Structures are given as C-alpha cells and as structure tokens.
Length: 213
Image 1 (cartoon, one colour):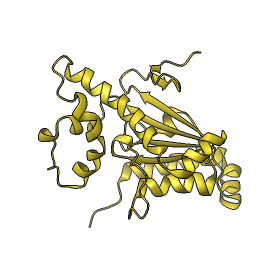
Image 2 (tube, one colour):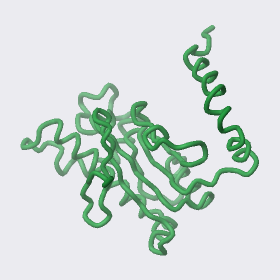
Image 3 (cartoon, helix red, strand yellow):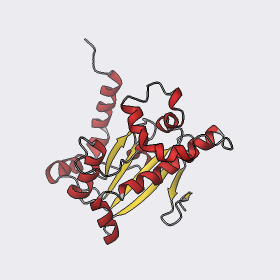
C-alpha cells in the first residue's frame, strides 16, 4: 500500500505552523461567513503557473478554475457535464464576481499539443485531443505558417487563445448581460514562466502589454 507523499505532509505542517497560524482568524471567518471573492481566474493546470502564487493572494481572495490550456468552451444550453462552464456559472450566478481573468502562460504544453497534434503523447480521440479541438478555429488559420518559428507560433497561439476564450465567455448570456451593464469586466493575461513577466491584454486593441509600475 502506498503512503501519502511525505513532501505534502511536510508542506502541510509548515503551512499550519506559519501561514495558518498567522491567518487563523481569516480562515475562521471564511468558514463561518463563506467566500466572497471579486475576481475569478481561469488558468492552466500547469504546475508552474499557479495564480495564487503569481498574484500573491491570501485565502478567499480568488476564485480559481484551472483546466488544460486555460480554455473556455462556447456556451451550450443543455450541453451536458461541462466542468468549466459550471465553474463560470457559479462564479457569476453564485458569487457575483466582478472580474474574470483568462490567464495563459508561456511554454504551455496544451498549446504545444494543439499545434503539433501528431506529436502529442495521446491520440486526438481522447479527452485531451477533444478538449484542444476548441482551438481548431484558431490553429487552422495560422498553425502551419512557415514564416513563423516554432517559438513564435507557440507564443502567438498562447495569446490568441486567450482572446478566443474571452470571446467564448461572451457567448454565456449572463456574462454578456453583466458586462454590458458594467457589472462585470473580462480580462486577458499572459505569464512568462522563464522571466516572471506578466503581460496584460488591452481591452480595446487586444494587444498584450507589460503593466506600468
């Protein structure tokens, strides 16, 4: 029988002796009063791009949803078991978040697989292949452009996919309604794992720029 990973237990003990000890009252309040984050972040499952770490936030500050390549599917009424769509619905309808950030990152394995489906470790008929099929409307337009290097193509799709997911977010009726009312703002961000740089998508142009300050 396998034992629980020892490094996780060590980390838990350190958490209890430091962060939890320092924020005991905050955890108590969150347990009794519930959560009320104002921002939802849709991020990648990649272990190198954890939103809570990147934005240095405490418990209860972010509502985080992570999936392969930080994708948002288009709205589908009676669409079945959609984990990402369910998370978006709860964030909007249940928590009333005021911001949704779609955050991609550099060297994303999911994006690489979308660009090189023949080289992916799994066939296109599996869950990952079907999920990354959400990007086909984008990849078919420039995926084989010989003027781009592999690295340029990768970064381009990482950023274009963020815009694509934001467009899909607007297909959710309650997202579009609240954005038009000014009660909700949609944002794009891209994090470079190697350099630690954060790039923010301009609402008007769609360009990604480094934040000031």
